[in-house]
Length: 383
Ligand SMILES: NC(=O)c1ccc[n+]([C@@H]2O[C@H](COP(=O)([O-])OP(=O)(O)OC[C@H]3O[C@@H](n4cnc5c(N)ncnc54)[C@H](O)[C@@H]3O)[C@@H](O)[C@H]2O)c1
Image (cartoon, rainbow, N blue to C red; front, side, top):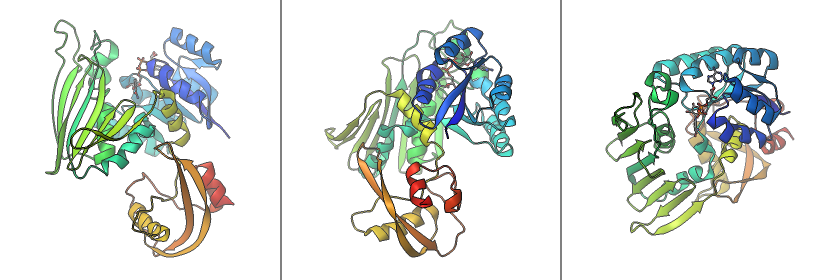
């Protein structure tokens, strides 16, 4: 059964990403749109032929969607999250999750109390270029240097709510920088040290206080360090992350990732045409799905040895016995090829504690009462 989705906030990001993403979804249908600006609302309501509302609460009351995609200015986020949580409506919320640590803690509490799932839109996590980078980073020896840059030029870097710290929570760091910072958290975890220099000085006569330019230095232990240059004043438009290791480097740019030899020649490369709606669709269709612990068989081991190892690595559980083979399914992997996943049943020495290294949560489920899993997993386990 398809989920009923409402779109809240119909500005740039809704039109560019989320509405096309929903149109391509096999799991959700758009059932209503909402924007506080009646003219903006009218245009999207006509384009999508669904009921439209200028008030979030009224829309939730009348339409009762299963989930809402929230793409509003940063200062409006808290109010919309509160409204949705009060009505039991799950959310896919545009970054940032919150504009301050205090607001983040408050929103997390609201979601917990309301038993609401809130997923933050970080579409690079659903882009094959960015997921492939993880495998390439394993091949450059020990990474020790990070050089990141996200820049573009706009004539008015302080325009609208984005120029006002009280509304936006910050400037280029919380805006585009959020994506680069999330990549670093994903690939390397939380840094131990951060120093940031930033300014709102590019247009001296303009009245804005959200930083237009920033340099962030960061360090992990004594082995890995680097910097991010962020600017919405500095041309050319650039989005890149270069990670340098002892045996080579990985250069991630918009739409391509390369593994470079030490002399800068390209050892391998993966590129992809710009397809913003595709990651938006994947977030809706794949985000929040439960998976079976799984991984790749390494050269030196058998498939059964991999079952023992991957289970221990991903869950902290020790398998006492592999009790059977339950079948396989194929899926398209992040390099665009096909991966075949072989699946086994097993018993474990103890069912607790589960220590997760790659997933957000775990649950034990009966084959007849599976939570949201892919069709392939459901067919395999339920049959
Ligand atoms: N993931 C990305 O790559 C990416 C890119 C751009 C923007 N964003 C994020 O998307 C969000 C929206 O950005 P945008 O560029 O679309 O902004 P925008 O200003 O173009 O659009 C925001 C829309 O929200 C509407 N709105 C304001 N208050 C509202 C309310 N109370 N109820 C309903 N609608 C309301 C406005 O009228 C406007 O149409 C921000 O969080 C931003 O950081 C993400």
